[in-house]
Length: 240
Image (cartoon, rainbow, N blue to C red; front, side, top):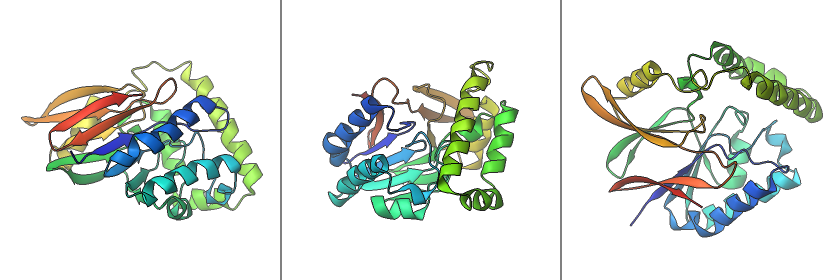
């Protein structure tokens, strides 16, 4: 049956060879059977700019994605909170389409809304302030004007600080806010919702203004690979 696959939060980097090998196996054996593959953010652990495409590890990943698309699977990539600087040069190398966040599509007859998910974590005010800053076009241009090595060093500092701050944040603070979810579903006429970011894979049912809405949360690839498979009959999670 024709189907599409959805993945998120792979956080690929050279320091995590296990998840890289699982991903490469996925692109060679599972993803080619799908009509489309949607990556809903954080494909990479970090992305300092498209001028880093010559990095051998990045070339390995983009080559695998290009092989997948050449074989006939459509590839769509959305920014995450770790790789929000991915741009058109990366998309061209992978033969991918960059998606705005959020994106609404007709998925085999069911209106389906795609988002990375970090905008739904509204209770974490400190993170939302940071997100607003780094998504500002002027801030991004100023950052990208800096030397690549300097950008990478700054990103590594941010990553370390973020990991330290997480130790002092409650899990509920870093999860989605129900009101934010309801508002997003209402704004887009009560679709199915698919997102990542929270690393809490599950299926949720929401009732918004009397409308039943399905919400699927994608898992991360820290231990094993996983994806959401959707077709005309519905969606179900797969692990590998």
